Image (tube, rainbow, N blue to C red; front, side, top):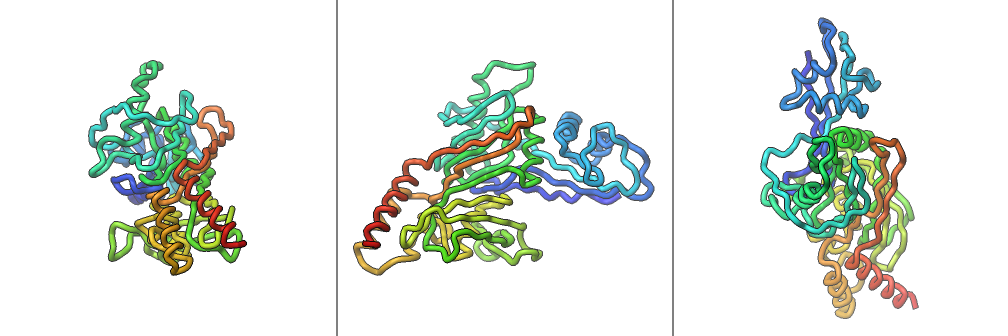
Length: 352
């Protein structure tokens, strides 16, 4: 019997991440495998897992045998290829509910969508055990009426960076969490971001493909490695130019994968770091003139948005219970909008 490959798609224990929060297991049974229910087989081989979690995963189509979804009572056979996608295991530390205001865009019995403000940490981790979106959601769920004795708890299946604003989805029960995790794994979630980046583009649309992993020297940041190589995880970002402002551009990015800092790293890699991004070189003048007035103009723009100019604008998914296609979109936050309008006015001036 081969062991599971525990390919856990999670970000850092802190919040600086744009990762899917699921675990991916794959195994091929050996030629002497006896017939056995797959839920029992998985229960015996995946650490710290409950039968309920396995059954919810099967119901959501997250357990595949030979590339086809199976139910909990499927009996495995020799040479079966088993693939399992599970939401991330709950954190081991105690997370307390906190009365923190959050902007809820949509909510029902299964999911909740939040328009996260920049500066809010999404998930508790080392150095960030309070003041996070999870703390806020726990408080929000405590205020809801109890339903069928099932306690509400926030089930995050993706994150966005602390200083990135925009839409994030959380599941309110085990089935919804498993269903959404599978959609992220299959890359069927439709995520689009707006970014203000340095420079103008030669082409109005393009795709960046490159593995992402920690920088081998500077361990707090990530960098791009050759696609298909042994270092890093496969990452794909599609971009489209919405407006050009002379020395900066407003673009839309569509994520095909969700790696840590993906857009920020990919944009830096192609010479267009995200404006005001102090981790990946966007907080310095990358394009433009040497004149004092221009430097002052850029500093004024930095003051308007003292964080990376990146916003998770839209999110589309299949509703776990109804099967309906859902799509949500948010406006640019005030700081992003102010910086964009200032660059737009500047571009009209320099083209006179």
